[in-house]
Length: 296
Ligand code: NDP
Image 1 (tube, protein in one colour):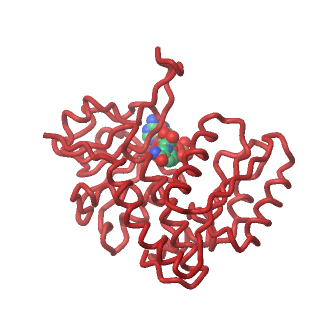
Image 2: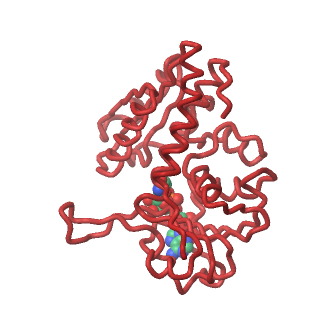
């Protein structure tokens, strides 16, 4: 029997655990605050930001949302970040990516105060992660780690193949999984669009994480019996539905399920975890900046 790893249930557990930390902050008169900034016309980005704000509200994090016209000068976004950096009620800042084309994404990331960088993308935080003492683990990779833990899959000694080398998923996940800590100690291969014979790599893996943004790229033929499959992908593909599209992952679910010992669905797998870990990082940021031990 293949285990379907339920990201919604695991995310619920994490939110319940977080409420203790949020209570500890409340005892010290601190309400964690997360600012989300949207500068894009993209409907999916809008949806993601709304989901993040709603999740904040549900756990008692103060959500502040700033929307900037997609065609506004880049400086407007930079000034907004500066103001949020200086705002003592804001403990975490998330600029929803991708930003408008005329904005320098690297400048955006570098400008966020590293102590408020709850995405974990600032070079200072990337450095800490690589060196083995992370301040904030990037949300999606941390969520993947938690999902493996929930399914009793210890990466130690396992061969993990990650399909995708982006700065937000593939690279930080590889860095987390090779650390000499619980949830790490794996042997990791990071594949990308120039990888020769991807299927040969995935067939050798104990754990495959697909994060390439190519709908249903990884199928059952590319997996060995008993592989654990984590599907990070979220792709809108045209479909005869009310919205005119449906969401599919980077894994062809049915054929992969036939081979996997455990697999995450899309939706309902990694997605809810990304949001839960954002709440986690925001709570942690509030604790660190206010000097309250929140045990995260
Ligand atoms: P990017 O587009 O930034 O990176 C995609 C990576 O996949 C690149 O490294 C690329 O290689 C590689 N790739 C593309 N095509 C292939 C291929 N045919 N074979 C092997 N590798 C390939 O994507 P992201 O990392 O931002 O996102 C990946 C997926 O995860 C997307 O579907 C996205 O929507 C989803 N996502 C989901 C989240 C969630 O919360 N569930 C959060 C973040 C992302 P190269 O570097 O050579 O171009």
